Length: 377
Image (cartoon, rainbow, N blue to C red; front, side, top):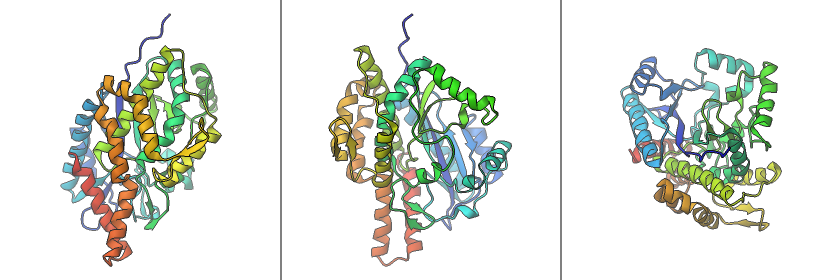
């Protein structure tokens, strides 16, 4: 029996932090705000683990153009309602100066259980991410494509980094978020599986022991979704700017299709051990796009601008079919303008050069993040 051609639909989930427009510090979401957002964005809005966080999710989208319309609507609705409470959303994976010790998790059974289970590790979860789903109906094909996609997860991370600051200090990393997230169990790069049945047996072993209730408690950088017939990329920091989100979604979708296209010619991307891919993951987490990544075939570190051109060449056929050529080309703009982490550092350094205090300089960063959230709406 022939395997059906995947539809490569996409869905995007984003997590936002809410800040007070006067102090620019984190703020708990009022009940009325949550109710209004929930009513207007039925099924596409929910609270998150911390009460200063919210999450949105698009419907199933055939292409990036549909995802753009969805995300514009979702972002603008959350921003409009938040403003009525003197709040604003920011799409950054860490707040530049707030203290995780002063945050509280949402009083909801799911999160109460999670907090109890993860103990002190959960208390530091003042982080936000972005997830991209790509529709792959056939389960074994999901596993095969996920095995190959692992190689490109560091590239996605490097482009997305938006969390250089943590509790008022520059961490030196482009994605400090992963430093926090990796303390949780069942995180990091996904293992290699030979088949869907092998993956299912592994998950079932934990479920049968009552260690997890289902696969949704597996938080790898990429996983088969527990709810949808998709592979779900979870590696990316959330992006302050909508157009960056769309570029990352388009790249995830186009890479998945490119790897599927190789299979039509009995080809595949070489599978590398997680030990090697983890080295690139660290380089992306630490340096973003500034120090390059390892090309394991060539056995050398390539600058990121060269890697971007290679990625564009690899997926151009697929991006053309998927209608996302401009979003893929936007990778060049991200390099020219700097990643979100690089831009935040520039804002901070400019304020310090203007003899602002470190705390006020960090406030300028939050103001910048608010502006970026609204820039493409």
